[in-house]
Image (cartoon, rainbow over all chains, first blue to last red; front, side):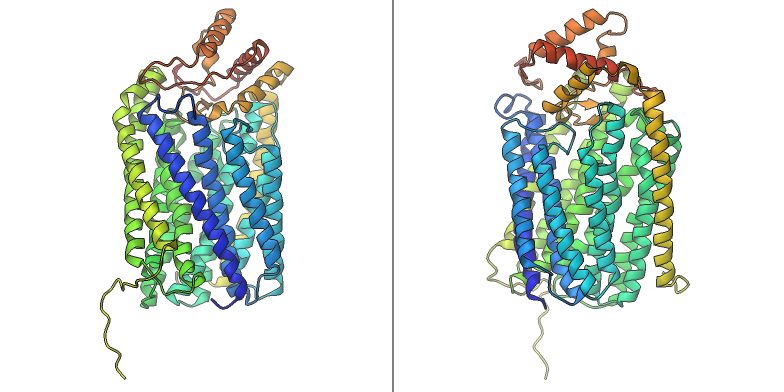
Length: 448
Length: 150
């Protein structure tokens, strides 16, 4: 860590990880209600818990990106962050807005479009915080060295902020509402967020593999190009059955196939760079997360997305547990693992200690990843069964759900194991850093 | 990545291609907007009560259990076609009464069955919400869902 203002990332990461825990706890509660339907039904109904689960996810991922930007931009731009005070103010507003949203949901006050449930004044606060961030990092980047990593990162952040403005447009015509709602939801996660993801991965690769920046940045252009060329018209796979024209079935199906490509390119990119470097970075846990992230994103977002995005398939699978399966692994693989990779890389530097608790950190990687994979499998099987019974046989929804109990119990089990993994990660990342165990255990005496 | 593709070529492809796809996406969006307004939905029957019903739907976060045209949480039944499922096309009065009675009877407290909370909607709110369901059931959704189970 070369610049003092990189320290700004630390409070962002702590806030992000706290909300990560809130998200996972809400997830386990929601999973419990799936298994035990009468649980909490009158004190804390399912819809409230689900809002907390999804909103906490989005907010902590954003906090992670903000923190990552404050960490990497000084090193890339070779100068300190424009205004640390603005960064603190931004953090304060953002966290205040997030906590207000949780309190607001618990007292039953919310708007009602999925993921955009925040009351209007909280949405305004989020925009203000976002603008403070954009001002702060843009000023830093403009005055400093220009690199492809910062350009793509800023492009992604500016895009995310501009697209969020569609959250303020809520027409009475439901079909129009849905069409523009996807501008925020799809073009975020399958568009501009991929820019943020690729640039954060590029930074990690530059730092950890030592491969020439020129090579990594060339790949970066290719990856984000593939992401936007496929992802923008890939929005079509949400425009099949909501009152939009039939031609979207052709466009959506075609571009959904292409949407696998950026994720596949990311896998090739990361593994190729690590293979090419031949250098052993001491932070092995960060390396593990950085390689695991594109792999799980490829499966969760790429393969599990492709599974049900052909329009003739989606006609039957739309709005079943298959979507839930895809959503879980895609978010975990692409964006949760991305942030956890970055935290694992940056936290030892921010806390000014050697890479520590690496073994525990790597255990948490395997526990969380295995639990999420298992959860995705159980939901996929539940979804296939549901698709057949509901869409082919025509059985009633509630009757079918009774049949799926076993899958929901296994999902709850996976969720509980995931929670254990998350706690292990938190301990490894933020807990006492007293002991240092070398993962390779091949310490050799220094030879003079 | 071979040496054939230079970094500046990769950059030009990225910016040029992105501009192309953004413009294409916006053009298709404009066409889709007018298709929705003029063809697939019935704007002439989008009354005040339908609009109010949409707000009842939103204020109570129904989407975080139910799905509507397949989008939402998958915890409770699809409601884009609930009007059709309750026989509203043939017997609108019966469907309206049935839906109101159902919502008023919640929660059922049946053990082992998912519970819907009691939202204490007024007569007016119930009517508005049901008008919204009725209007939604007439959106041209390219034949989805495959059957009335939703």
